[in-house]
Length: 533
Image (cartoon, rainbow, N blue to C red; front, side, top):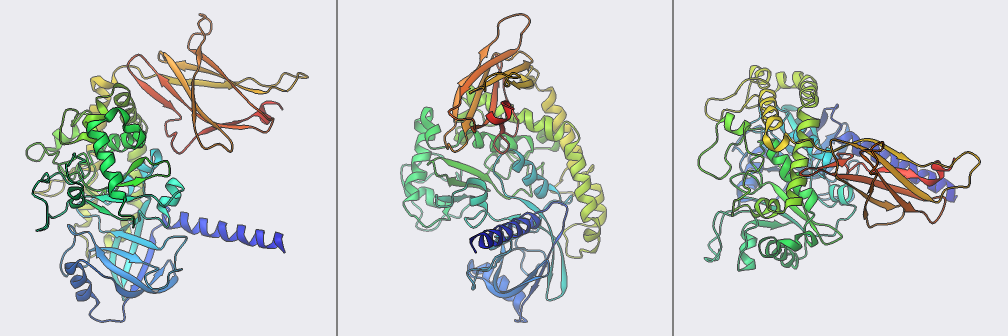
């Protein structure tokens, strides 16, 4: 009986995992069929949005699977239009039935991709971010309401404890804040700084942070932790690593810069990101709302909107000296953090934009959705705009750049920038000493790596199977002419079953690099038992 239960549980897990993966499969357009019994559903959804609260109860079929009495409302104050048939939608499957979910998901967010004639900005933006740091998933969905085709939307993974936080961090109990533009109420404190939004500027009164962040979790004491984060960032930055996940922060900032994602912390209004406090107590930022990335929003907070050419030539060190962007200026003044940040920019540019990957993904996604775009009568653009959106500027006032032309020009600018002309160290070969034929079993992991482009140091970051904390050790440089560029290190093993997960940090004279480049998600591993075969 026990074995049967185990098998059943395993099959259930596999089925749920398959559904979860399928809900955000890049190659599949999801189908959401919403029905309302109330004939005045459209006016009621408008009214609920204007009042800023509440869900309208309806039913939905997700890829043919029925869910009753779900909560539905419009989302996105800026993109909301009274009477529009293209408003963004939030669907709460467990609104009345607490156990209702699809593939583990109880909340579904649908974006109307406002100001994106290419319809790939959000989907590709999340896809790129998720390759290197923790970010939501996204793909496409077709929405019908009461059998009427409302067209193509972007389906985005909700940032909540049900799925995303568990998937990304393996922990759901931490404080979760959303940063963004908020209207100051009559009760706003006069001593609060104005126009800071989620910039993390230091305030003398904790109540000021409540004007610029929304606490998504239940613990009101979380405001003390946010206040500690801001205070440390602005007044004790040498210890910021104790309360901020610096590496994922630098990845987010690098992503915003490379993709000219200025409707973010990096732009005029420090908005569209979340802060989550992980189990180790450190906050980590999470990107959000990417429909204006790749040059669709053009203001950095310094003067008027930039031209497309100015966006293409956005400085990699934008806000380096800006007092109003402490998350950038405070971190990048640290030499090592600046090296890591620039390394992340180079990685994104080389691996996503400089080798045809982005262009290939863009064409594949547009091919996938082309027929649905043609049938979408509610979209803000037309079929010709969609076709031209890769290479031509769309719109007379908003002037949204052709996404492929824009990223090509941006990539070429970064590639030739003086900050990236210096050679970055890289790995040629990683080897391990193995048991000699007929010899005694080895009881150490003996690493030997060969580097290119003048690596000065190589650091091994590793943990053994069953451990939670990562350890670091620098490898020894082999000084002989024959072994130029080689580094070695040994890690003892207690048993023959030991397995090590690892990644490498390569340091040049003024540069820094990682192996593998997406080390947050992909660690290399080696087994002592395999080396002893």
